Length: 70
Image (cartoon, rainbow, N blue to C red; front, side, top):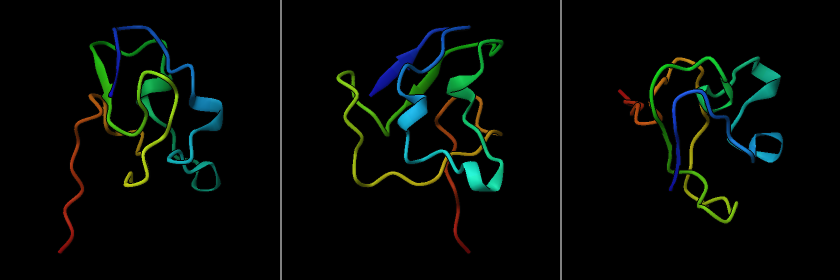
């Protein structure tokens, strides 16, 4: 788990497989103007990506948003 403080950005964003650039989606972990902490469960403190992540939506401002499947 990677915890980003308010205003800090993810150092692994350029190689993150969970940011869907083809769909113009981004991650709030890359937003330097973000207000509040962001928690990323898709990467650990060493920069290793987990295998069970999903795509990241720019609407998730905390990193804790859950996607519900109907």
